[in-house]
Amino acid sequence: MTVLILTSQEDVTADLVVAELRERNVPLLRFDPADLPGQAGISTEFERGDFTGYLSTDGRLVSVNSLRSVWVRRPGQPAAHAPEPSEWLTAECGQALYGMLYSTEARWMNHPGAALLARSKPWQLRTAHRSGFAVPPTLITTYPRAAKEFASQFKDIVVKTVSGPPPVNPPIALPTTRIDPETDFSGVAAGATLLQRYIPKTADIRLTCVGGRLFAARKTAASGQVDGRYGFYGHLWGAVDVPDRIARAVREYMTLGGLAYGAFDFAEDEDGTWWFLECNQGGQFGFIELETGQPIAAAIATWLAAPRTA
Amino acid sequence: MTVLILTSQEDVTADLVVAELRERNVPLLRFDPADLPGQAGISTEFERGDFTGYLSTDGRLVSVNSLRSVWVRRPGQPAAHAPEPSEWLTAECGQALYGMLYSTEARWMNHPGAALLARSKPWQLRTAHRSGFAVPPTLITTYPRAAKEFASQFKDIVVKTVSGPPPVNPPIALPTTRIDPETDFSGVAAGATLLQRYIPKTADIRLTCVGGRLFAARKTAASGQVDGRYGFYGHLWGAVDVPDRIARAVREYMTLGGLAYGAFDFAEDEDGTWWFLECNQGGQFGFIELETGQPIAAAIATWLAAPRTA
Image (cartoon, each protein chain N blue to C red):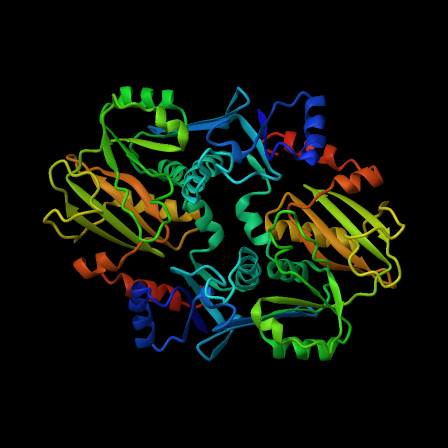
């Protein structure tokens, strides 16, 4: 029974999990959809009710019927490395590959159908509310007047992206930013804009959930600091206990979303409340493991290596 | 309670359903994501566990909490009509819009998460097998040798696209085509290729499933005809009864896929067997309704107009 890891060759975070799986002698195949067709190949046959499928890359061939799990890490776009890439070739190869994998009994971290919903910020906020987290009042709008009213009501607010930074190369940073409630909001009409009540925070919290295991880390915030993801403020991540209420809410969120992995970001306020900011279903964990020593890669390997019936 | 129809303005098939809903005085909003932001707008607010959301277009404003259903017909790409469209603006507006809709209790025809799987041909073939349909032996491969072996085994075969025709404008036809089993298959290495045993057919069958209602239509095939979608062979679509075994398999397929709508294509052979070719979860139905008089638009309107608890 093999673990399939869908990711690019340059993904050093995946290397941590690969090392854990190798140590346990769990067979694995690292496969980049961008290499299909060419360095990588697939073949699926349907005959008289039977279904057989194979993936190959780097000279290795694996039957999809023997897959125990699929880890969707940082897969390249199908056919991206083809000599003549095109939108159509990507569609042909992508549907052939993912459709074959959807047809297996493998466990997914995370299933693309679940990831589709879990990536969207409104779904995250709604699901966080339903799960029992404290969530800062938030507005997502294309109406300048709605933005102005929200700013008047909450005074101290931040603006952040809905979908993440622009998909450009080299990447650009677009940190969460405090804005004056008297700002001219007319630009809101040009694109969906996310405004949120600012939470004065004592610390950033990153909670990584792997199956049923929770790893929380805390980094003390500098005074007035808004977005801890950019810049160094003299504090490192350290492991911290997970309050019971948070643990229950995390498990509820994962169940509602059908997720096996999630990286939750919270702002801790003066009262010690953890305010839900977002949950990245494909979030990084290497930097947390590095600073806290929490065995996240090992937990992912354990989840991926478990039998299909688990 | 409002029905939301996500589609472009030029969609005449949607017009049929809109007319049915208007006749029944069911409130509806026709919304094209391409018009967002600009002619269309959205606003979602999350506060103390409450969630409110609004969609507006053409000067009308609808609360998403009052949506009874969402019909995903032929929606444009979010922000496609913006003065300065970009991949990022599409992501920002798309996540804001669909995330808001995922957060509602509305019924979907079809939910994008279900559509994601249902669009892929390997998933369709696998699910058709599991549902009890007769499915022609099929190979999807990037290996010339596998293609050659399949051709040698089945002799009379066709080639078709995995994902549909290339997404170009003006559209090009790429009909299913019979090929010589002695063909040079080396080109298979350049892209995922779908080969299928040719089914000599007496008729094409199109079965449209709307919720629990089935509408089957039959068109006599010309001798040796392969792909009935292109060209006119002197026969029209006529309504036909659905065999019990097919009805059971269709319902199983819809359940496995979490689908509310599906357009099934079959090839009827000399023995009267209906061979599953594909199920298009967003397939057209206007041409069938026109020739058979089957009330498909009315059935869709009935499904969309039903209460949320149905």
